[in-house]
Length: 426
Image (cartoon, one colour):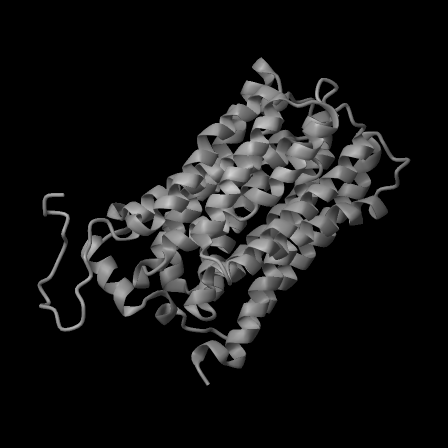
């Protein structure tokens, strides 16, 4: 029996999957109330996006957390993640009660810090708890479970909050009870991670060929072009994704675009999450059979086509385009992460920190999009996505070369001094 088949490995992998599921549901509950936050605190679009900024700015610490994970261990950092997640969710309650937007933003900051720990520790666990060939598939499945939870969450909201309750002031009691229950459950999950046995996954990240390439091409993640460009691409792709999620209901309710009611947009939000989850599940299935870079390239092209419709269409076509794009962008982050982290060996934790810092895009780009929407109109603000999606396509097409920039891996029996061919003339 290999290390990847032991009971502690299976239990820990199942625990990580469950954490991704429940935290995905939690983030959806918090994100689903964006229009209510906007009304409660009398915000414009740019100010509304400060909640997204507060939740994602902690990712500036991701590299430091990556080094911390190396010393504390992946599993222990997951426990820290759940404690922070729970504390931040509970803090939303007094923020709403007092009508204090600063306190609400502080709560989202703590939630984001927990999310930071979750991804820096959880993504390498998903990647390493199993055969290397299935790394991208497990990452997509783990993130798909979070997306599936985000389908369930809006449905639960329809049962928790009666359709007759429309005013934000009337929704507040329901929202506060919901956040108290979720915060308590997150703290219980922290105990679950403490009970899970620890598993050494360091051997899962390095094959002999990959180790040779990594050692020759780069002694640091800061000089590894595959990791650095992966960070930039993830930064832009996640920033676009955050804008898509945060402004989806606003887009549907805009009278100049689709003009749906709040109740209709909430139902469509559930469908959007279903489409997004289906995209990740399809990605997990296809990437067991097709190279991840190829599926990523196909999805990037499809996303660009639908983006063109989002920028110009009205009515049902606009609704279909912004909902359908969720299917194709769903695999962007887990696939980019898997491609960038491949073969990094003992530098995996640090690289995970840097790549996870790409979530800063979720903090910064939505603010820019919100300002653009206030100035030029909500529909026109999606033009910013034209920066991100072409870069995703480029990375998908060039990922293999970026992993081994100018290197020639010597065959068995070749002299050990065989090195880079980048010094040779083309």
